[in-house]
Image 1 (cartoon, rainbow, N blue to C red):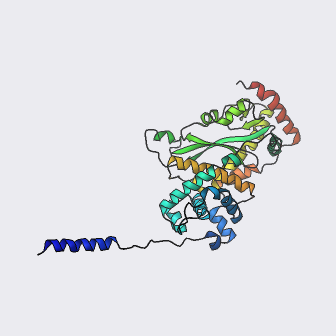
Image 2 (cartoon, one colour; image 1 turned 90 degrees about the vertical axis):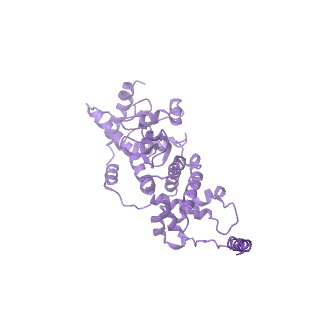
Length: 353
């Protein structure tokens, strides 16, 4: 048997196999604008079509396709993928199957789009300017007669997957799951005015409050007004908290006004998380990607309010309670005057910084 001719024949076969052109499997992508009615689209992406077009125009300059290849995802397709993930919070492979892209593409696109949307925070998330303060305070005062309020503050936990490394347990909160402790300040319109998403789940709300840039601005008297917080925060010159042991009618009236006004932050969290269910489920991303998603959804929450884009979502029993509390009648004028008098002349004198 001629071994040399056999080897040459094998090489020819291998060369033939290597030179076979395998056609690429290019999936036909779906266009949600064409597939769904306005109502169906909003249920699946949490925005109406006009708002999605508006967002697409904002982020297009930074997300324009970098090549002219036929299969390149357009900016709008990338936005569809990202919004669909925000609206479901499900596994990336499910989102990919929904739009006919691979799960690795979903992961890359969600981070890329989230990072660009998060960059818009400087334009869409900000404390009230000097020109806005009067209107913001007046709106808060109309809720329950609590004067000089510029925002309500609280923290909420966003579930995440376990982080690797020696510091993983720092992200385990007091309820036993891994999370990011996100501090938010909102106004009476439920706009997010400030957000700090840098803290691990085991951090206490008061620890988060003492460290952000906002605290420095308040210390320097750059913003005139007060924040309302719950009893987890220290009462101070610009932080008003509930009185734990009420002994007078003035104490009771103060607490009623404070709690009802502060309810806006609970409603903000409810609207934010109902619009983006991914925030209530475990975010299965690297930490850097997770923080981008949190900030991006906060930006989109504000854009939705500014665009008057509301979404109808069934309330949970807990959210029904919040809604019922928010519909309480304002205090009578005489009682709101007592609250303001007590706040200005009694509570502030008792606070020792």
